[in-house]
Image 1 (cartoon, helix red, strand yellow):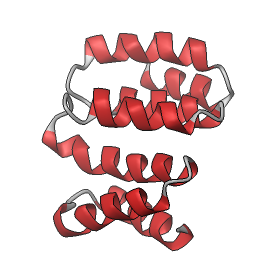
Image 2: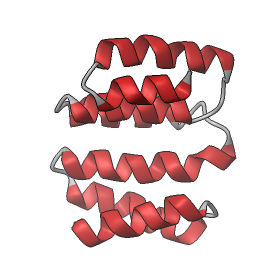
Image 3: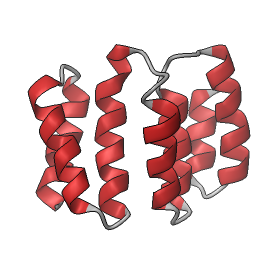
Image 4: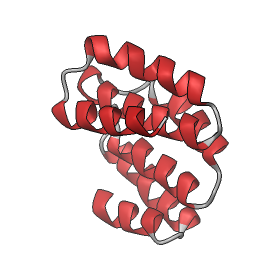
Length: 115
């Protein structure tokens, strides 16, 4: 289901992605993939501020520790795309000192290069 939600998010079907990914959240509470998919749907629709809101207000308070690194990397990306590079850098700075997820570390490095 998560992959289907990501496919919908990646093809501009934000409404369908949200419905699917909300179902994933119910099936896997506390995991970050559905929130990342929803943020991607907003980013693909040109709504970076909404992606930031989803990640900051909905995802980070609810998601288990092992998914936090990737959420923070996506938050930095959303902040950058929302025209808030200073805040994106602050998120990346905090992530640098605490991240354990190798994929999140690589994503964070790529985002930092683009700031």
